[in-house]
Amino acid sequence: MGWIWMEAVLPLGIIAGMLCIMGNAQYQIHKAAHGRPKHIGNDMWDVAMERRDKKLMENFSAASHS
Image (tube, rainbow, N blue to C red; front, side, top):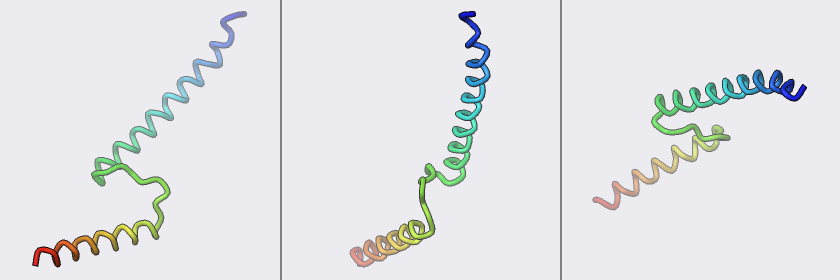
């Protein structure tokens, strides 16, 4: 009777392990495809601000070297 809890723990462990493997696979695939980890909660506004900031920094560095 003491080992009956193993009947529930074993399948739950397998499920948890598979979820971890799938999450890790998604992370590694995204990192390989884009060169950096995925930013959680990144919406269209954040993407537009990153693009704007990148353009501003390029313009600033081009103006400072002239």
